[in-house]
Image (cartoon, rainbow, N blue to C red; front, side, top):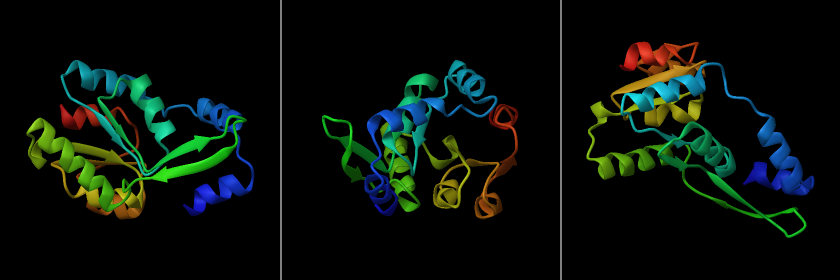
Length: 159
């Protein structure tokens, strides 16, 4: 809420938001890694402590099965940030969404993996069979199954 209040206070517009979002590239190897995971029949999802617009972009472009994020923005007809809706999808909230997916697909913790980079990913990393700390915060590296610096390293460890 604090971050989104700052966006509103400084007059964030949909036009600027969309332009900024469109300019953010994926890290090297992300697109190819997800394509390979999908070819192996692995279902993928994004569980983000960020904005739903970012999660939807990744979901569409990377062909992810599910997307869940912390905040959804609402704009006026003139494209000014008017309001937002927040969800419990950060820290422990990520675990709850993961549990919903596990129930939906009848998966055990050992059937699941997670890739994260922040301290907010510690809880979910501890709830899955394999967790990947990608260029991550030290708190996540301390609990993750694997610590990686290049995204495609996931394929060497998960398949």
